[in-house]
Structures are given as structure tokens and as C-alpha cells.
Image 1 (tube, one colour):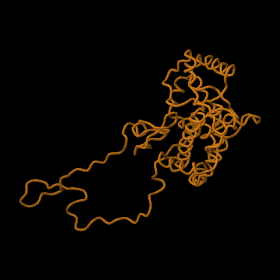
Image 2: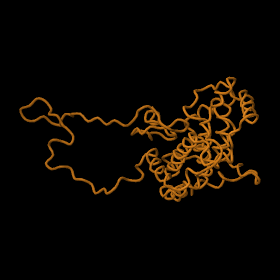
Image 3: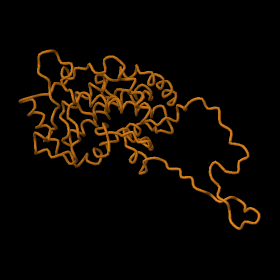
Length: 314
């Protein structure tokens, strides 16, 4: 069972953050098969038999033969490093929704949902992309619900080697998921008064049977692309902490010609190749991810993690 997420998302299972690179996973997938650690405690045999007894008495926990209880520690708080990335990302999400403006973006002004000839143009482009599916299929399938491993491979990091960077990545994914779902349900939010409300956008294959996506259609509307939103937000937050090479433009006239942003572009485009999104979905997701970054950086938890993550790369 899953709620919102990287295109479909995460539940709140205790083991939800069990393994590196699981974007919004539920407990069983993220921990490699087990939903959470189980630590059974039974009745163990004592080390010695008592006089006149030919059997070992049961040894419970805490041990029944203690002269005095074990001493308690002086811990005063739950350690920050012990938070699972999944659950800490929800903490950050709670901070994010308190930042004014998170629900005030006008996506239609930047990437309007086309109709008529414009819509047909997009459907024709998606039909032309079907021929590219064999070449990108393995990659696109791997990116269905686990995109952060591609950024982790760009410049090596993981939960153990760069814990603050890993936390920032998971926060970006969670907030990106939230933003995408909000605007998917309200694609015409904050448009000027006058136009009628826009309904959630149908998936391309609902209009064009020729597309027939090779995987199940995600259980939410098409616009904006969640993968694009999450990818560009992830690229933006990592640009704040990774070495400059990850954000260096190969074309000075093109701000998107950096390794981080080219990877985001690739993830979003792959969803179009699968027939799951229109190009305008990706454009809207890119805008939403980029605009969300400025607000995310205002969250106290994120602001506190940035210098720690920067130090991990020095």
C-alpha cells in the first residue's frame, strides 16, 4: 500500500528508510524485503545449573538474577543522525507548507495546457518517441520510483558517506512529490480570474490509444510531471552542496547545460518516451521544481543541513 510519492510514493512504515536510494519507498521495498528490523527476545538458558538441579533455568531479559537494575543513561534527546531520511523529510515538509507562497505558482502562465492543434502536436511528438522506447526502456523502468540513485551515481554519495546530502535529497523528493500532487489536482490554480477551472489533465494514452504505455499508468493526473518536478528540485538542492563541477555549464548560453540539470532533463524526457507525460507536463514540472527550491531553502531544517552537506564534499 502506498500513498503519494515519486510518481506513486511512500507509506509511513517504520522501516521506510531501510536502504539507500529508495525514493519514497514503503517499508518492504526500502529495506530490501523486510518492513522493519525484528529483534525477538526469548528465554535463554542460564550459564550454570543450580545445586540439586539437572536443568538450566531460563534467563529472561532483563536478567532475572540482577542484584540491582541496569543503570539508565543520561540521554536528553533523540539524536539527529538517527532520524530516518523518510521521516525527517516529512518534518521538513511540515516546515515547507508554512512558507508563504508554496501554493501560489501559476503554472499555466509558463506552460499552459494546450488544446486543439497544440494538443495534437504534442500527441504527434509522443507517437514519434515510441520508436525510442527499446533504447531507453531499462533506464526508464529503473527511474519509475527510484531516481535519486542516478544523482548519487553522478558524483558518488550515499546515506553512509554523505548523510546530510542524502537527507537533503530525500527532502527534495518528498517536497517535490507533495507539490506535484497539489498542482496535479489543481492544474489551473492561481490563474487570473476569468477562465473556468481546469480539471486534472488526462494521461496521453487516454486520448491516443496508439501510445499504449509499456507500464501501468500512475494513479494520478498528468500535469505537471512529478518526475520533472522532483528531478529539477533535486538537481537544484544538490547544486548547493556538491562540487562546482556538477553545476558547471558546458554552454555558457544555456543554464541547463550542467550535469545536474541535464540529468533532470533526461529523467523527465524518459517519461514522455514511455507515453506517460506530454512535453508541457515536463515543462510545468521543471518550472515548479525550480520555483519550489527558493521556498525550500527557507525551511529551518534545510537551512541547517546545507552547510553540513557542503562540508561533506570538502
